[in-house]
Amino acid sequence: MSGEGARGAVFFDRDGVLNEDVGYLHRIEDFRWVAGARDALALVQRAGLLSIVVTNQSGVARGYYGEEDVDRLHAWMRDDLARDGIAITAFYSCPFLPGAAVERYRAEDHPDRKPNPGMILRGIADWNVDPAKSLMIGDKPRDIEAGRRAGIPGLLFTGGDLSDALRPFVEASAGER
Image 1 (cartoon, rainbow, N blue to C red):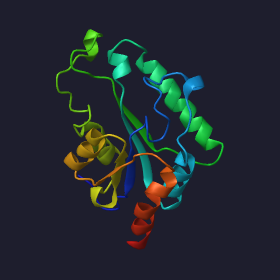
Image 2 (spheres, one colour; image 1 turned 60 degrees about the vertical axis):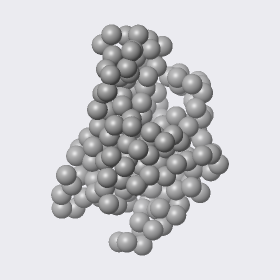
Image 3 (cartoon, helix red, strand yellow; image 1 turned 135 degrees about the horizontal axis):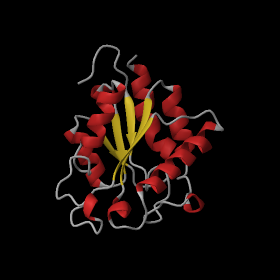
């Protein structure tokens, strides 16, 4: 799964972890960073870890917005962070949903839809990630379950400052090198 030189990563759920969950977020003007999110991403980057976003996007399946809207929002997030020298390594999103209104996104148990680990497993393979040096952070039990199924420990984020929540993992990770 991960080869020589594999790096650690933090897999982030998006809504409720990196940005305030406003319900089916797809418009830039509705986006607000969670307290400490930018600092958390910078902390991860300084530690030499990758930042990978894995997000269910059922709003696409429900017909509320399109995949291009998700891509546009993610491009804006990258650009906004880049102004401060912060990078997100990759974004993975799952538009599939059981009983979806949009037929092409209808899937009873899509491997990418959390709690399934498909997006995380792709991130591990695409970026040569070592699961033993990684963490999944999410605000829902399904996020943590997806990490567990991919062999990655999870941290349930229940609010507050994201950088404070993430700092113990990053510091422990730095101590292992």
